[in-house]
Image 1 (cartoon, rainbow, N blue to C red):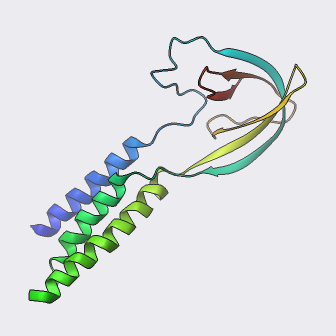
Image 2: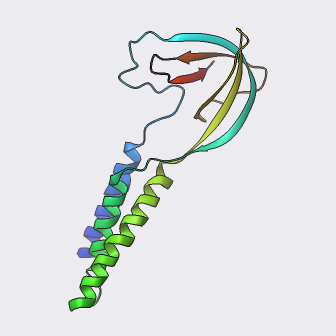
Length: 152
């Protein structure tokens, strides 16, 4: 029964973490950006390079891991040994949960270099949701907060 509870808690935590990841795609807009005027530039793709966008690092992954590790540690031994195993489980579980969160929410992205029609050259990193090729004409959309995306 305790193992089933542990599995349910762990899976629930991982699903929660995956849902917390914010999208870096060119088509995802925050609520604050919606209905706000944005500046549009036109340009030509110069280069596209595949990159890794690091995952989130919040207390949620650490917390889920620590709880899971504590539950597992409390199943080991008895007396002082059980207490030490529980503390060790909390610490190791917290570290593992933090690493798991970062890994689960990490994503592949593109570093897109664009030569704007005004002569400026810029680079934008975003999720790899749209493939671009050098020479392709694109729009670069910049929000007031500096958030920038490349679209067709």
